[in-house]
Length: 178
Image (cartoon, rainbow, N blue to C red; front, side, top):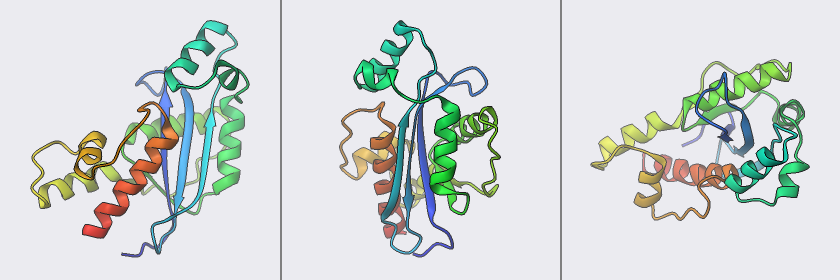
């Protein structure tokens, strides 16, 4: 199957579930080629949201990275600007969790960068739900359901880059079977 546009699959790690209260501490994305669904490019950045040593240490521990890596990470404003410059706005955004879109929009607003992506978002959860119905999988189509179904292994469930790459592999397998 070929798509009209390249697909920008993104994943975030946050401090909590509320996009208006919580913050992104890691933003990762892979750009998937519209013709062969292979990774063309990627982006990964940790995001420092506090100067407090305890908070930085807590986020580093959650992400499984060294304290110094988190401490030296850029602020959300710089990360969003880098992300937008890196990919532009021509790809179709895709994610497994639509609250990720709310977090991303909020981050773009904080960075004073226009969120000028197409309003159509490829909702990978819905795609997965239809797949489970068609293939008789008797579980909710969660990320972990597909990891198990396709026999994929995850090392760190809090690492957005690993999750987005696994998500891209799940997406490829679903499209191949469709």
